[in-house]
Structure formats: structure tokens, C-alpha cells
Amino acid sequence: MRFVQALFTTIGLIALAEAAKHYLIVGTFSTNFLYTVEYDDAAETLKLVKNTTANAGSAWITLSHDKKNLYGTDWNADEASFVSYSLKDAKSIKYETRVFGDPECRGKKSNFVAAYPKAPYSVYGNYFYGDVHDAKCGMVMSVHDNGTLHAALQQYMYADDSAVTGTSFSADSQYLYSADKVGNSIWVHNVTEKDGSLDFLSRVDMPVKGADPRHVFAHPEGQYVYTVWEGTSQVAQLMTSDLGKLYLLQQTYPLIKDGDQLSDFWAHDIALSANNKYLWASNSASNPNHKGYISAINVNDEGLLGDQLFLTHTTSGGGSSNAIAPSSFDDRIVAKTGNSTGFIEIWKMNDDKSGAKVVAHLDIDDGGGCCANAVWYS
Image (cartoon, rainbow, N blue to C red; front, side, top):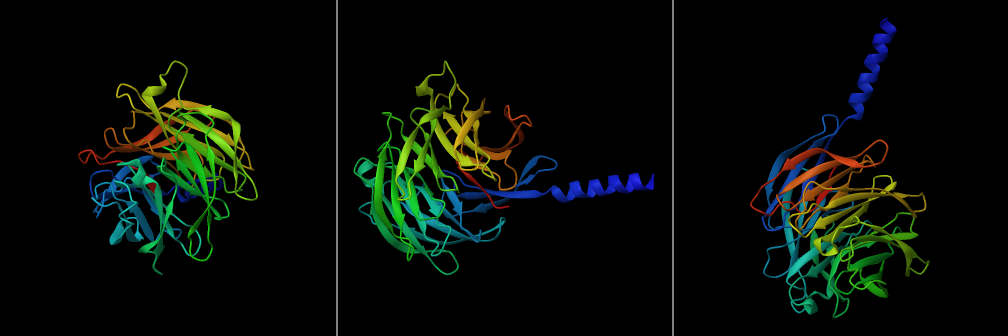
């Protein structure tokens, strides 16, 4: 009897040890706040633990490689710029600096930001809105030794018909892939090892008019790259060559169902799960009377996409967001934000992989700013 009790006690302790509280940082569009949210994976609850007044409304945020810095865009700035914050932890966020680009080529708003995962740890920003000719550029920013933004290192060009809405680095960090929504193409730039500056390598036009790639994500094995087509609500896959060139594969995956009107939706985001088992994808509804979609696709060890496991309605249309952030600790768990009413949710895949459901929901109503994208701090 004592052995049985001891066994159950041990099992209980193991379960408690495996359970954890995880923290996310959430950005906003038009309100200058950063929200720190706690997810308890045992109780499956979300709660707001810190509201940090920020120096920007960041429609996109990203963490540095060591999670000691947070970089963001600024939705509200008259002159498009990028901001950086130092982090002691997920609840201790301190504004450090702001970097402006070339006034001749920075668009109306800063739109996307990505942090290079290797030395020299450069930061890459993109612009959007306004005259599209002002959004045809990207900017490479250098950082101080402590990781805070330092200065504009390079202003590089796409094309007159370009406006990039998302970027991703290759597995070996040698290439930067850019999803050019307005130019309906994906660009490949070579990353210079010394200072992080970029050299143009190639541009791949999408085979479907109006596909409009919104985001792009590279598999860590290096052979495959994924993109979500905003205009046609599809996920597509590309193969890479040793020279970094991309070749589009034929098969695509739908992010709307039969009977849906294409004009009522705009596909939003894609990202790989913690151990690269699944590619998660989301779709927003541009029609306020509709809900968006969330989906997951099987991924093999090399990165080739397999079966689409499910395509499930989200709880709202998503507004300007519906961004997804797969957790770093469980392939089945993904955070999803929504801007239509201002919230963050945790979705969990069913055990049989036939669907997913919301296991935790937190409303953050700050007058229309929240929520943009979220990043997992832990």
C-alpha cells in the first residue's frame, strides 16, 4: 500500500514538475503599450500580469536571439522608424532607442521587423502603406554590444512595385527571404557575414495573379520555404537550391472552405511548431460577418509538407491581426491574437489531430490597439 501511495506521489510530483507558467509579450497597433501575459499550461489559463507603457504602437515585435532585447515597429510615428527595448525578464521591459531610415524611402509606416540569430545580430525592418513607391525599401540596422538598436547600416531596394509584409532567414542564416505582397513575389538576399548587410540574389514571381504572399517561413533543415498567400487564401511551398534560389512546388493548401467567397478573407500568418512537426497557418475575415480560420499541416523531417490536418473556424474574424505564435515547448499549442475586439487565445490541437480548440482566452480591450502579434518569452 505504501509503495502504491509513493508511486502516485512520485507521478504527481513529475506532473507538477512538467507543468509550467509561460510568458508572452503582446504588441499593439495604435496604442502605446506592451502587454505581458502569463499562460499556465496545467490550469490552462491566461492572465495579464504587466501593462508596460511603450514608446510605440508596435504592429510587429520580435525578440533578439538571447531574449535580452525586444524590437518593434511603430504604427503611429509620423516618420517610420523602429524601436528597441531591453528586457530583464518578460515583465521588465525598458525603452532604449529608436532608429529612423532614409527619409526618401521609408513608406508611411514601419511594418515588419526581424532579428538576425547570429553575430553581428543585425535587425531588419520593412515599410508599408502610403505611396507604394516609398515602401520599396528595407533597412538593415546595427546593434550595440548589449543588443539595443544602434544605427541604420543599409537602406536596400526591392522594386517600384514592391511592399514587403514579412521576412524569414534561411536555416544557415545565409539568406533573407522577403514576402512581397504588392509585387506578388518572394525575394532572396544574401546576408553578408561581416556586418549583416544584404546583396540581391533573386526574385521569384508567384504563378497566380493576386496571390500576394504575406508572410514567409523557412524550415531549419534548409530545403523548404513556406509562404501564405493573402490574396488567394492558400499556403504554398518552395524548394531551395544550394545557391539560395527558390523553386515553387505545385501543391497548395486552402485556408478557406468550399462555398466561401475569396473576397471575404485574407490569409495572414504561418509558422512552424516547436519541433517542426506542423506548419500552423491562419486566415482573417475581411467581412465582419465571418470568422477566420486556423489550420495545421503535417511536416516531415526534411520539411516537406504532407496532409492538411484540419481547417477550423477561429472565434472571430481577427481584424487586422489573427497572427499566430506556436509555443516553444509543445507542438500542439499556439497563441493567436485578434484585433477585431482585442484578445489573445491559446489554441491546442486535439489528441487525434483532427482539429484544435481554444483552451484559454484573455480580452485586452484598450480602445482598438490590441492585439497585434505575440512572442513567447518562455
